[in-house]
Image 1 (cartoon, rainbow, N blue to C red):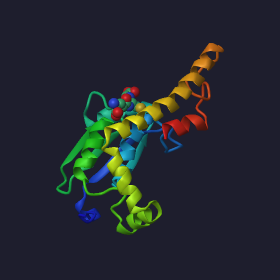
Image 2: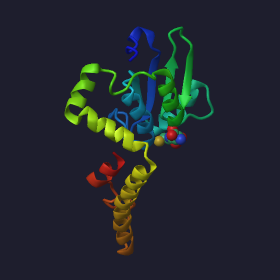
Image 3: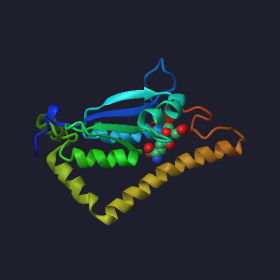
Image 4: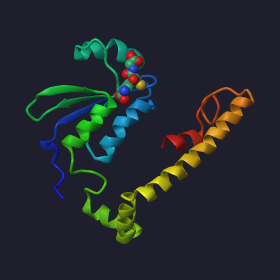
Length: 182
Ligand SMILES: N[C@@H](CCC(=O)N[C@@H](CS)C(=O)NCC(=O)O)C(=O)O
């Protein structure tokens, strides 16, 4: 496996995420996770800048000289100083995989061994082999569709009772909604 590139050889990345209000620099917005998860999966270092909705609309377009900016947005400063802004979580994800192809949860050899010691190499090989069998994967998809069907039933029943909200928790998400998201 190619060794993880030292920090001095990596581009500097800044990820812009939406926050609810300036005093709380944290993001809940779902679009942001679509960029955060691939970056974290690949173990890529980045700084985070949290912006409010009004900053997103009023400040960021001026900062980047664009008519409109959506977030997540990733600012990349290459080793040579060249800068660019990547918009849209899909493009950020594509960039992450292209730029850091050899990293990932198993970049650390000791952690890989620890994981395999628990899960077992043969179980792992078996699962990887099964994943390329259409018959097996179709069964897995069917099982997932069945599970999701339970949610549809719950949501439909709630609608029929005249209750509002599109979350399992009604108008506000509860733990069950967060489990579905995760
Ligand atoms: N397809 C985009 C959607 C991103 C998006 O719509 N983000 C919202 C914030 S959660 C946004 O930037 N909206 C612009 C605005 O409200 O002015 C992605 O996946 O990154």
